[in-house]
Length: 120
Image 1 (tube, rainbow, N blue to C red):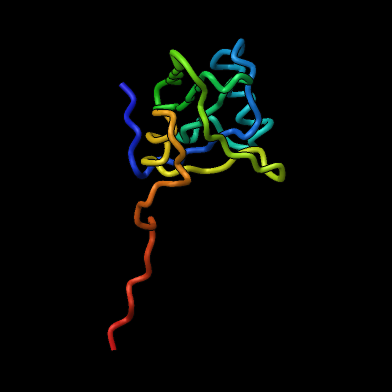
Image 2 (cartoon, helix red, strand yellow):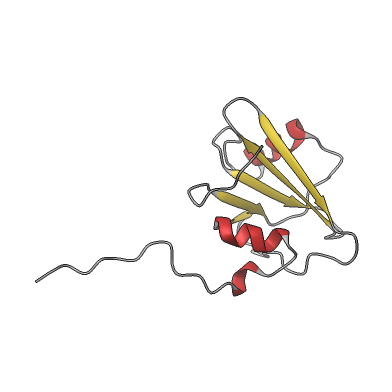
């Protein structure tokens, strides 16, 4: 079973992926288009052209997990669109919102890192 933890890095591909590709094809996209190592433990998230389905790819140390979610109706409303870069990062809780069809940019969670003020 795969579990997304807050320590995991999540990369979301901006451009849609060809869902005819399997694990090897998506791992190749990670290397070539996203310039990332598919064996790094990063969760890579891809969407199809119609925005009705997502695929997540992650390596757990023994092999790859590929998860697929297709909506029964409607489309995923949110998707990052950064023309200047091939992927964007999300936090684990933002990925959960995305998987439920929501907009992770509107989550009001506390920042991941906050400086602790020095004692005087």
